[in-house]
Image (cartoon, rainbow, N blue to C red; front, side):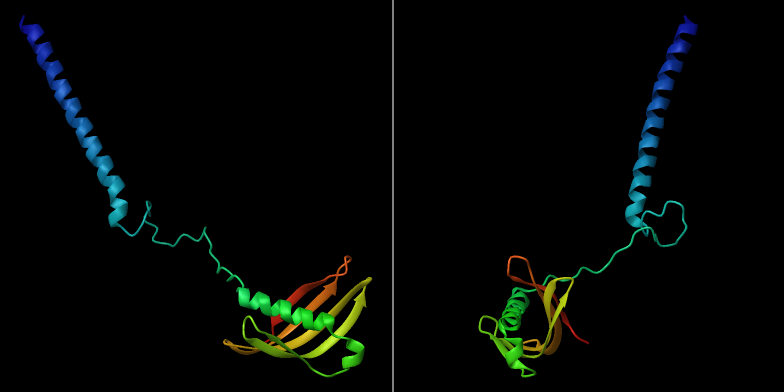
Length: 154
């Protein structure tokens, strides 16, 4: 009978020991997972070097409705002008909805590969100040003009 009691004691001790080991392992895992919160990040190998595998870039800001409205106004002035009659005279434009205004100083017509385009240079006076722009608009097959570019100079 003594031998049976020893086995029972050994089994009870084994269960308590196993219970303590599970508790110890749980504490070790919890402290390891929380150590990232208190350290300089998730640098598991202690290299101390920044991660260069990710890269970021600036986001191009969306154009404002005012800028788009001004582009449409300038395009309308350029495309409705009779280039033969204006010669080198400037073409004034104004956008009542934005308060912007300017002067188109150059309109050059060109036809390349059967596509009729007008390249122009204008100023824009707005609440942002005075700026110079270079633009290009082309005649599409359906008879409408499409603004191809409108970029601030300098």
